[in-house]
Image 1 (cartoon, rainbow, N blue to C red):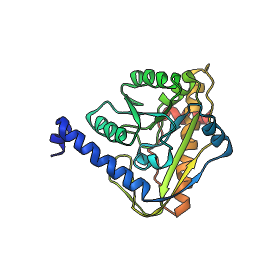
Image 2: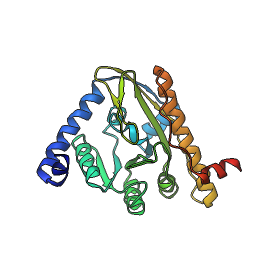
Image 3: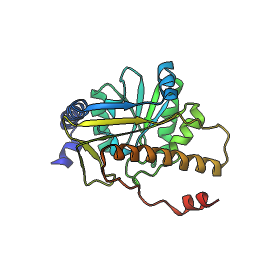
Image 4: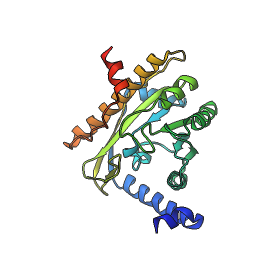
Length: 240
């Protein structure tokens, strides 16, 4: 049935609309608390474009933490499943471009840079679309370096939730629960960097994003969702 829906354009539109309704209901039935540092709030108020960074497992309730009137373009997978999610997001008032932080990254990066040039913010799940979980690729660093926009990490959690058995341990907020969004401080990435410096920034941003996630887990006493194991290259950089 799922394979048929993915291949049939009419059923894709219907499924996308249903997904959008589910996202809207789950996101807005929760009573959310927002924690935004003054420096981040200042950038929001300025209207300048930013690069919003959040893990793939927190994608479902992200619309609740972002004012759709602030123009933002989200990077989605070019795969059929990505198209389905992209259409669902469009029903919620968001724009998407095809690409990923892994395959097709160069194409996606060019599209995102054009959006930044237009004054639109961009949203990236830097471990999407297929992981490894909560491990960041360098695509967001490249976008920030070339586009001149600050990275702002964000994480959310809900008091009552369900963890799905997906590769990323997708979080599903239960309706009418309490929830929290925690935004991080803006992170500026210099334009001129060596490969080693790019890797250090990548590791640092990944660490800050995971720290925000842990803070949302601590808020409700949840068991922490652990990132996938770091690779050998990262371990060598950290040892220097």
